[in-house]
Structures are given as structure tokens and as C-alpha cells.
Image (cartoon, rainbow, N blue to C red):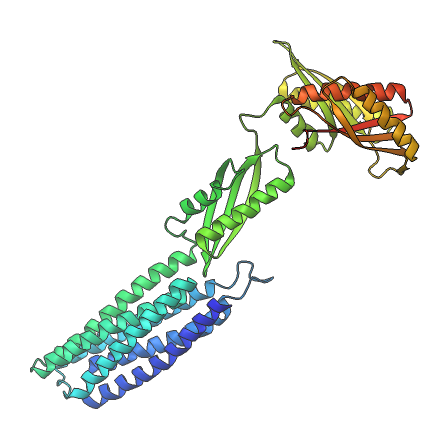
Length: 457
């Protein structure tokens, strides 16, 4: 809201300055009979109209997008600038016609005094201040309407200098100086209009700002997880940079990781452009470093299947794949078999028809099974057994043993410690041996869940 307040404040002050200086130049121009000064006054009057339009437009251009204006209201600034350009061309044409008439008819020169020069010097000072203030506000708020207004007042300085030169020529007896100065003002107005029209039309036809595409692409590519930017388009609506992008991301990433990449990409383009609105379309692609297991997990996830214990063997000319597939425990075998067959076909389509796939079907554990803590003496018995089975091996310090009774059987959880230098596979083998012994000794134990950790520091 502070940016909008700055724009409206600068525009409002500019209205008062435009009105006062236009009136002063017009009165003095009529009094001394100077076409150049009257022309410059009319130019300032157009600037006054432009400033009023700008003041009105910037009050609504920063409004957020709504149901009817999905990209906001920023284009109103471009439309207002185009309207002001049309007014400038009408004024320039009228001044040129009048200047030609004065030159052809030999109109007497204006009455020269110090008053018009004083008015013009004050006008130059005021316009320099306004142009600087508007240019600064336009740069800070990226307002096209304020930038156009700043250009107006900068051109007013040049116009006032031309009028001073014309009046000076008239003072030295060159009767045509005033009309020539008026024609010069008209040419300046026309050149200003051409420059404004070019910039405004480019914005209205959605021409991308110079270097914006490269800048946005670099910002998005800098985000971790982005493989490449496949396509990117940029358009400006008022002060907001709208960026539409299609970005390649690893297909092995889960949805929440892709969402994090999107958020980071938005932050990156906001840092690069300031006010930026990013549309991020993620395209999952395979990376060169994907393993066979990664590719199989992607296939299962895309089918909404829960798999684990994926084993892969390469026999040289043949790939052997083993998978544990979890399905609803109440699902009929025929339906479960169809699910398994579909998974096998999808894997064969990925790796070739000669790949050997075996799918072990097992019931999916209920998400919230009912259970309760076992009696303390039962926990002590199982903890003692675990400590006995671990004795003499590299697994030690069995602790935090918990036993829960469920409808399916007992669930045992425990922590243990191992040498820090042991490999994961070796730790798994030794812990797995302890778990197997426990299940053989206590048939009621359905599952054992262990957590190995290094010794305390």
C-alpha cells in the first residue's frame, strides 16, 4: 500500500503544479501576443489533463486481481498513456497549423518584457523538480503512467527553452522567432508522443521486457531440484511481472518436494524482479543417475501401490526383480493377483519384456490397529531374551524395550547399540538374526522393530 500512496501523492502534487504554471503561461502569452508561449501553455494544459488521468488511474491500477480482471488492473496505466499520446498529437498538429499561418501572414512579433522570461524560468525550475520526483516514484513503483508523466515534464523544460529562444529572437527584431519557437514546441510534442506510443504499444501487445526471459530463467534454474527450464514466457501488467514457466523436475521426487521447489522458485523470481507472479508447471523427467530401484518405485507410486523390499539382480543378459506388494487384507486373491500382474507388466514395459518379475503379495497393515501395552513382567521376559541373543556379538546394550498386544499378535520395539564403523548391511544382518531368534522363541510375536544407534558420546 505504501507504493500506491507514493504514486497518488506525487500525482496529486503534480496536478497543482501543472494547473498553476499552465494558467500563468497562458495569461502572459495572450497578454504579449506570443504564439510560442500560448502553445507551451496548451502543452502544459495537456500535461494537466494527463496528470489528472494519471492520478485517477494509479488509484485503481494497484488493486489486486478479481473475478473479472485475473491479471490485475495494471493495464489501465498503459491505456491512459495511450490516450495522452493521442492528445499530444492533436495539440502538435494544431500548433503546427497555427505556426504556418503566422509565418505565411507575417504576424507581428509579441511585445517583449521581463515578465514572460521570469514565468518561463520558474516553469523550468518547477518542471525539473516534478520530472525528477515523478521519475523517482515511477522507478520505485514501476508505474508506466508516472514514467509517462515524468517524460512530459522533462519535455516541458525543452519546450520552455525553445520559447525563450523564440522570444529572444523576436526581441532582436526577428519577427518570425516566435512562430518558429511554436513550431519547435510542436515538433518536440510530436517526438514525445512517438516515444510514448512506442513504449505503450509494446506493453499492450505483451512484449517481454529486455532481458527479462534470461533473468527469470536464471533465477528458476538456481533453485535446487530444478533440472532445466523447458519453456518460459514473460509479460508485464502494470508493475507486476507475470512469468509462465514449464520446469523439469526429477520424477522420483514426492509431491511435497515439488511444492517446495515451486515455493523456492517464486521466491527466486520475486528477488530478481520485485513484484512477480510465477506460474510453475512441473514436468517430471527421468535423470541419468536413476537406479533400477528408483525407476521401479516411480512405477509403483504412479499406480498408487505400496511396495517394499525391492530386490534387483543382474544376470548379465537378464534382469531379475523381486517385490513385496501390500494390498488390502480383505481383497480377494483374484483381484490382488490382477493388481500384481498389472505391476509386472508396467515394469516389463519400462525395462523390456525379458525382465523377470516376481511379486509377493501380502496384506497391508491397518493404519490404526487396536493395541495395548503388555504387562511389565512380559516386557522384562522379552528384554532378557533379546539381551541373551545379542550377547557375544557386536550388537549390545539392548534398551527401551516395548511390547504391545494387538489383535494380530505381539509387536516388539527395542533400541540397541553397535560399533560406529559397522556398515548398515552388517548391522542389519546381526539385528535380523536377533529378531528371528526372538520370533522362534516366542511364536506370539508377530513383528519385531529394532532401532540401531551408535554408542553414546
